Amino acid sequence: MKTLSEESLLLPNPLREGLVEERIPEPAAMVIFGASGDLTRRKLLPALYSLTRDRLLPARFAVLGFGRQVLSDEAFREEMRHGCEEFARRRPVDPALWAAFARNVFYQQGAYDDPAAFRRLKVRLEEIEHTLGLPGNRVFYLSTPPSTFAPVIRSLGHANLAPKPAPGQPFSRVIIEKPFGIDLQTARALNTEVHDILDEQQIYRIDHYLGKETVQNLLVFRFANGIFEPLWNNHFVDHVQITGAETVGVEARGGYFEQAGSMRDMVQNHLLQVLSLAAMEPPVAFEADAVRDEKLKVLKALRFIPVSDFEQQVVRAQYAAGSIGGKTVPGYLSEPDVSPRSTTETFVALKLFIDSWRWAGVPFYLRSGKRMPKRVTEIAIQFKEAPHLLFGKRGETIRPNVLSIRIQPDEGIALNFGSKLPGPAMEIAPVSMEFRYGSSFGVEPPEAYERLLLDCLLGDGTLFTRADEVEASWSWVSRIHQRWAEQVAAGRTTLDSYPAGSWGPDAADRMLAADGRAWRLP
Ligand code: BG6
Image: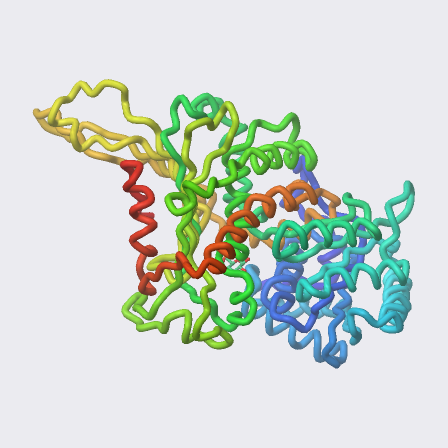
């Protein structure tokens, strides 16, 4: 089999010839803070390697890992190679290509709040840039615990490593991992700290759901097709369900999850981002601020859940022992680093309203849970029933039309409708018209991190969250946390339980049943 040689990295790719949009960034260096952590090995380096394999990175590109652990360049490269072998989309790793890529991968040890370590980092970075002929364009990736975000950014500022943008000068951009704050107050405080050093346009707050192909396809589906948008409103839509279900438990992240819970871990970021794309008005352009302005309007239009309706609109629960796929799994309270008296939620279901002309009166039901029977993320738009059924009793099998957008796995879109059963009688059966990514395009969608790293290098912030968006979503979510805290203070917790391997507590079903509806079985 032909392998890619080092030189071929620099040659034009004939398959890409004639493509209108060559999205190759300028030569740059990427500094990864938290380089000895899991995310770097599982996601970041594999994404950079796959981008190199697809010839989407500039030929001159360097990675400098920074972490507290003492590691040589060689040891870091070896570790990253294993990560790529296990997790890169483009596998097996091509030895010649890896050798060329890894030659520009380096490691530097240091603490995140040590000015001397940042001075050494600067010297090292400048040396690398000089040797490789890089123009000084830099991306700093904060893959570190949230408590270090502000200290790292301050240290970058003191070392003058990330100057504000100026015409004709190289760029400095900073990618910040989640969680961005743990409530409205902390998110605001972090925004203030970050804005002391950086301009908003230098800041890339990452939410990896926005890097998923299917999430982006939501925009194409809605705004590149003429037939759906006229139906996308309260005249035609009965309700919307958004599900983010996982089979995994908290794995080795009990310590983190105890503080987060599903509301902070999945809803505040991923599900509210998906919701805002599904519900937003058409932006005036497919540009970062135009898209983010429209998403922001949705987040700002989320109606705060009144205390009087709180228990009908918010359900939270924790998994007990159960079984998934025939395998017995322990309950949350038996997970490592979890308090045996924990009241952290691993499941949340919500009914919410968007106070806008488009969505007035349309409930959005969201649910997210760990240890569900199946891993599935989807948006289901359920349309209103036909106003008058012509088919009498035979029409009883007619179900409302549902458009389901499958974000993962089996990425695709399905439209359910009623069809006449073949035969002399007027019998009706539900059928489905489906589009599947895999079979239509014959390729696996790229990893979310590939797209997001590339976009940041290109200076495109469309798929990253802006300061005001983050604050708007925390503002809504923090009210729910506040109410839970009040309930706990009053000695009554509303935490339900569900067996691992089920679709959540009965209370979540009752929430929809009260409205004459039911959760879809995805
Ligand atoms: C992360 C959460 O942000 O998203 C995890 O911290 C969760 O708890 C993960 O498992 C889900 O991401 P994905 O891409 O597997 O749906």
